[in-house]
Image 1 (cartoon, helix red, strand yellow):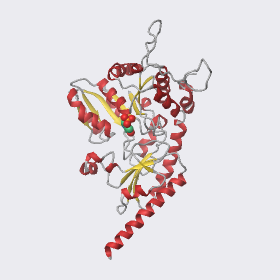
Image 2: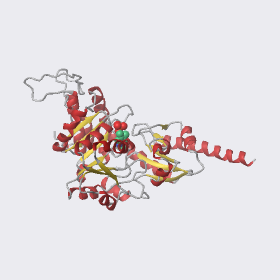
Image 3: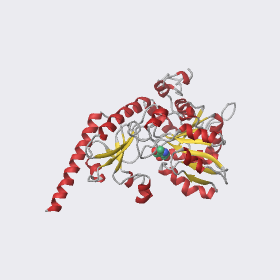
Image 4: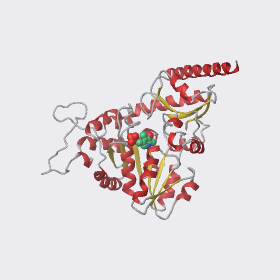
Length: 395
Ligand SMILES: *Cc1c(COP(=O)(O)O)cnc(C)c1O
């Protein structure tokens, strides 16, 4: 059956699965060979050529989920990001990147691009003017990320692709936060979609992987560099990722639902100031998110009231784990000022609207009532402590 006629959960479960011809087992066999025959074969297979049976099978599933022609699977999200950017940028070229980007991508650009003589501009904002102003005659790539980390800003996909198409510029998006369940950028004319599969695709906080989806021609261009840089993923992990992705549709939809309920609840809760979630009608980019996303995702952030210490709050949580990374079935929190955005420094954080009391919340699949209960007990613990402290100062 052609994947384009199948529903998303069917694609997650079946597309690209390998038949077990020998024993008729229900799941894809794992082919661990790093040595394949070269005589009388159509394809010369080798793990670093990204073409083992398991790599090819999973590529089909990921391509189908994004509605793309072809895909490549990488050893990490950053292997996918770096290989893809460098495949389209030569010495003397220029790239325009959205101002709010995943920290690793930002570091790749500012730490590495100069030695390749690739110049870059980070946009001043996310509007059409900001992107247009950043363009130069030698701009070859526009790179965006939406929703962005940690304030869940939304970039207008149509705006970016229209701007790029008229000038023959290749557009790339990091679609990690949305996952293909909530956003399919190729349908909006974006050329290349990149994922950290470490996040929603893996979904259990136990895999590090990446993926790229695009047309056959673009994937070929990326592959030409990928085989030289060597960022392929081990077939054992490819298999584990295939297994994880069978439940991605139901996981992400449950996370969307949980996040929506929690965002509304947090918005009205004492001890919490602003909540940043694209599903809330009060979010600056709500209408844009509604126009280009099928679901608003499982990621949000919120500001703790000024009298609540972010570290004490996170330490008081019993169920929700304060931890790096995101998108697992378990709920996690972190404060960007101390983790992902620590190196920016307080001044730059302030410029980007990231306050010291901002908490990023990766909503899991647990029961909402249990998550609410956990947040409530943590808040009451730290607010009573805050009050006590004040009293002792007075005495
Ligand atoms: C985690 C992440 C990456 C990098 O992925 P790794 O698998 O850690 O290399 C890139 N972009 C976004 C949005 C991420 O969250």
